[in-house]
Length: 194
View 1 (cartoon, rainbow, N blue to C red):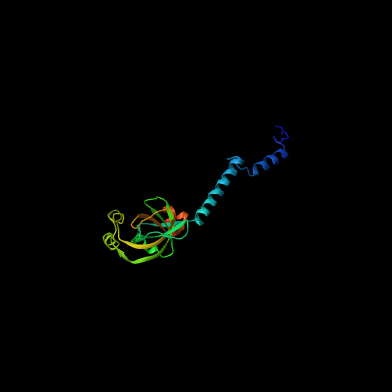
View 2: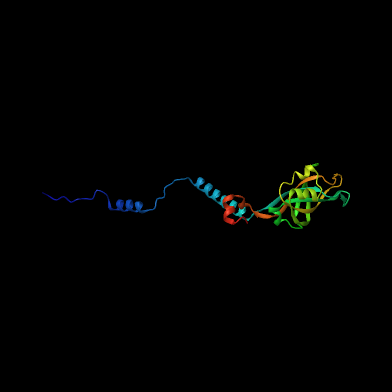
């Protein structure tokens, strides 16, 4: 047997080139570059939305019913001041204090008018006691359904609106603010309702 000079099947240079190419990191092309960019933009928008909803605050209101306590007092040619009495449920009354802003909606006009709480009565009264103490009519007395505290509010109304003593109203009193994110039940529990 003769031994033939065995020549390699592949050239040395070709083998080195092949091995170098195999060692290079090859990342799979799962998504195209425009899709990848859009995903990053969406991610940035979600993060920005989260930061905004964490920092943004929305007003918290307490609802109450009430009546016009006294007639209008003209302030100027365009506006009058009306004194109203608002009955705030006792469970929400600890947030109500003098100086907080509010809105009153009179049943006759349907529009909301701005006002400010001037004072709060110290007594908690039952609906029956409210009816007798403030001499409420039957229709107004039916709107007060739970023990309440009376709050006095001055409301600015247009001078041409005629409101009479005993006119019923609905009121919203702004008792503070809370984070927008806390409106979602999951985050409200995490943030302690702040």
